[in-house]
Length: 292
Image (cartoon, rainbow, N blue to C red; front, side, top):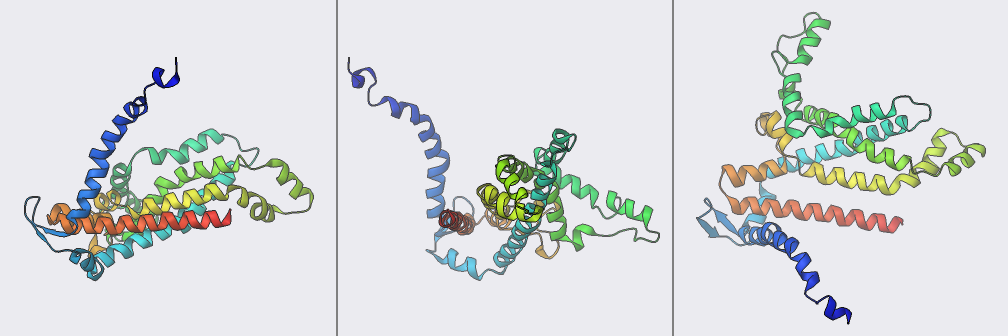
């Protein structure tokens, strides 16, 4: 009996049909529909006027969009330049031989990423509250005359966001770096040590090249995730924060689409963000391929 008669040609399509159906309904159709919707000015889901590419032109003239882009860029820059080096440093410490309780420390550092952004926002809202926040209570106990009300969330909007994200994501990224460090060739490290290389030289010339693929992946993951920030500032500041210093790109998209009911302009913002994310992903891919 031939293989084609035993396994009809339609069998592979039968197995991929569930995925294709779900993808078409929940991904492809909304994606195409949002592209068409971005050419309209909407007044709720049932009333819209065709405006062509005017929404995309308005995006780059919109002062609020520039504010959201600036805030998101600052947060993304902090995620890459502060959070990732801290995660790598923790991974290097936990990877040292002779450290007792490594599994416990890994659990402690990783556990904040398990609780979710909503919990983290509520927690830091309680910590940085102006009246009975734990930080203010501790400072009043240590520093005589400390103001009874110090508005951390109003004065240091971006600092509060960065601090909350550090607490949540540093341990998460540490796990990636720790896995990469444990795969470094120990024979190469020993040979470098015998040749007289110090700890810094061993890290820069042996460890760093070995973990570069994982480091590149973590950088890309952090950038793409930071550009899509929404829940943390939305709950922590109950909106965009004072003077819109907590406004992010996804939050601005949400405000236009679900508060102003202009789904067309929100779709245009979403496509600008999608193009930005795709550009970063393609650029990262090109740079890593050139290095390889």
